[in-house]
Image 1 (cartoon, rainbow, N blue to C red):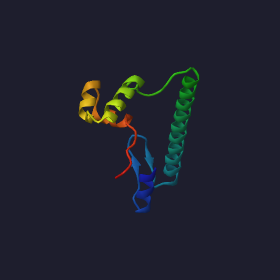
Image 2: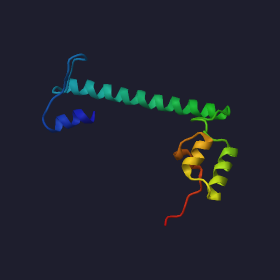
Image 3: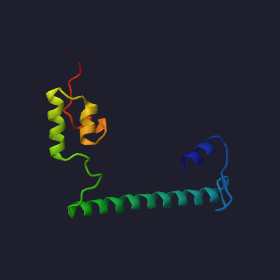
Image 4: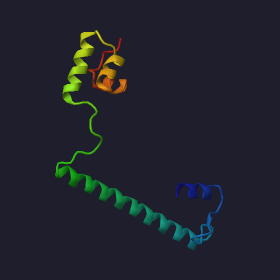
Length: 113
């Protein structure tokens, strides 16, 4: 709709060959706006249904999203290895079989120097 409105601002009409919509006429503009309103309504319905489905799943105890790569025990091991200062991030990541970014995500935030 924004694109077609931009066309109208520049004096350009829009004509759809498959839907027989012509925005240079008042009837064509009406049909176009009705289709846009219906599309927006359908999009809102999809959002509402998705949110209702997620809420129902949460109420059943389902947890959305990806499962954590590290268990709480592995996080504690990584934090302990880092705190000891004898291992760098790459070594900790190799030991636990994850990426360095995963290790950084589970380390306490370091104050800026």
